[in-house]
Image 1 (cartoon, helix red, strand yellow):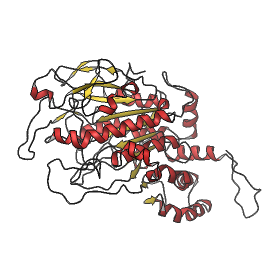
Image 2 (spheres, one colour; image 1 turned 180 degrees about the vertical axis):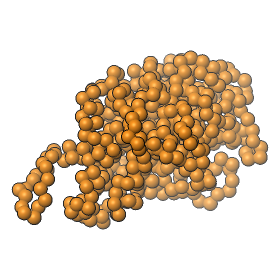
Image 3 (cartoon, rainbow, N blue to C red; image 1 turned 90 degrees about the vertical axis):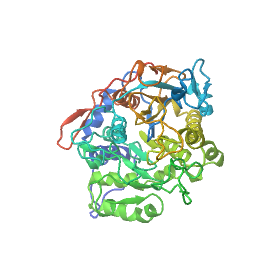
Image 4 (cartoon, rainbow, N blue to C red; image 1 turned 30 degrees about the vertical axis):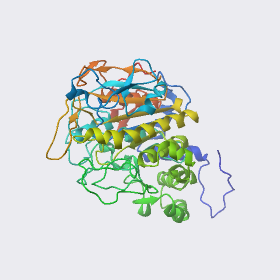
Length: 489
C-alpha cells in the first residue's frame, strides 16, 4: 500500500518513491547484513517441495527447557519393568493404537491435529550442550563452545537464522523469542539462543514478559513450584507488558537499549520519527524504528485485552499467556515465534518428578497447547502454521533417586532419544514417525536428528534448500544441514 505523497519543496529532502511495504522489506534485509538480491533470490526460488506456495507460513517452536521425559508424556512403556515404566498409566488417543500419558487428556482427544516423532536423537547429556544442539539444529558443538556462557563462535539459533534469511511481514520482526531468555538458576545465560557466528546484530528479538526468579519454576502463578519443595515466599504474579530488545548495533543512542512497547513507545514515537527523518539514522535504522513504532506491535503483544473465555481456554498462567501471544504474533505476520515454556530448566525432573509432572507441568501444557491448536484451527491459521514442541533432550529410561536433594525419584538427562510433537503447517494428524526401543532408551526405527528437525522448520517456512547465511567475515554457511522429516505430510 502506497502512502500519499506531497510534492517536495526546497525544505523537503528528496528521496526515491517506494511503497512502504518495499521500504520495510528492503530495510530489514539490509539490517540483517543481506542485500536486496537475497530477498529477490529467495522469492524467485519458490517454495520447497511439500510447501504450499503463496501461504503466509509461520512456525511456533515450543521449547521445554530442562528436558521432557518421553516415558512420562508421549512415549509410555506400559510393558516395561516398574523402574522404567514409571507411575503414570497410558491412555488411548483419538488415533487408534496411539497412546500417551494419562495426564495429557486434552491433547489425546486432539490427536487428529498433531503427530509425533519418537526417535529424535543426539549424543549430548549436558543441559548447555543440549540447548545449543536443539536450538541451533546442529549436533556438532562449535569451536570454543562453553557450557558456562554464549560465545561469538556459537552456531546461530534457528530463530536467528530465520530472522537473517526472512524479511519481515508488515512492521514486526521475522523471528521473536518469548517470554524470557533462558537463564540458569545461578544467573548463567544458556548458550544456543543467539546469533553466534552471524554476529550480535542478528540476534533474534527477545520479548521479556516473565520476571526471572532463580527459586521458582513453571507456569506461574497457578502452577509455580520448586523442584526440591523448599519453602518459598509469594512467587511471581505478573506477566509483564513486554519489552523488546534490539539486536546490538541496530540503533544509535536511544535505540541501543530497550523500548517498552506501551508507555515508552508512546512517549518516544515522535522523537524516533523525527530522528529518522533528519538523517541521524540511515535507511536501515529507519526500518528498525518502523518495526517499533507501528500501532500493530502494541496490539500483538498485549494479550490482556483478549476475550475472557479465550484466556480461560489457554489458562491464566505464563504458559497460556505465552502461547496466546505467539498465536497473535503469527497472525500479525511474524515468521517464527520461539516460546520457552518454563524458566530455569523447569522440566529438569531429577527428583519429585511424578508429583510435579502430574500437578504442575503436564496440566498447563496440555491445556495451553490444546487451546493453541483449537485457536489456530478455528481462525484458519493451522494449515499454514507449524507447531513444534521439544526440549534439549529426553530423560533416562531408568528411574533414579538423589536423596541428598529430592525426597522422591525422577529421571536424569538423556540425549539418545526424545519425542518431538508437531502439528499444523501441512503436517498430517495422527501419525507416529520412528520409535524408541522397548525401554525408551534409543531409537529402534527411523532415527531423526536435530538437523532434520531444523530442516523441517525451514521447509515449512518456505526457505529454499540452497539458502545460506553469512558469518561476521562474510563466509557463507548452508542453512540446511539435514533432511526434512518424512512421513509427516
